[in-house]
Image (tube, rainbow, N blue to C red; front, top):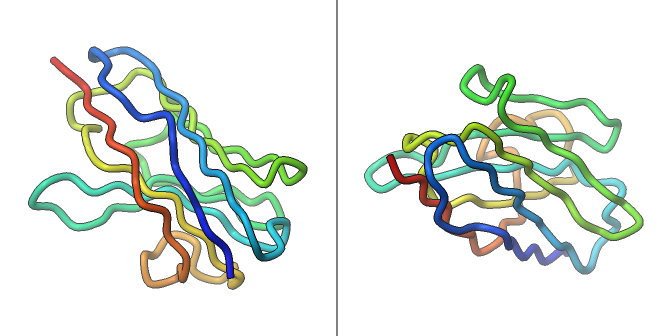
Length: 123
């Protein structure tokens, strides 16, 4: 059992940057696949990026060249660096963890979720 707490959200102008953190407690952090998802009002929860226990990184096209995911197993923390933010990136961002690396891009692949942190990008 692992607990996840996101932080680092806020309000930024288009083109700006934010770095989100996901602090984990409990469980064995190094064996988890870690993912970031987001959910905007009226939309489904959407996959953003994931990093497996093996270091494989997964992401959709809208992230390419703008976002980066990383993990620090010594600190039990995952990060999402977001650059060149757009108003369309506005959403609540969630950190998630799973001990199953087979479905890293799917909401249904994760069993543990943080409470979310709000990211708002103004135009």
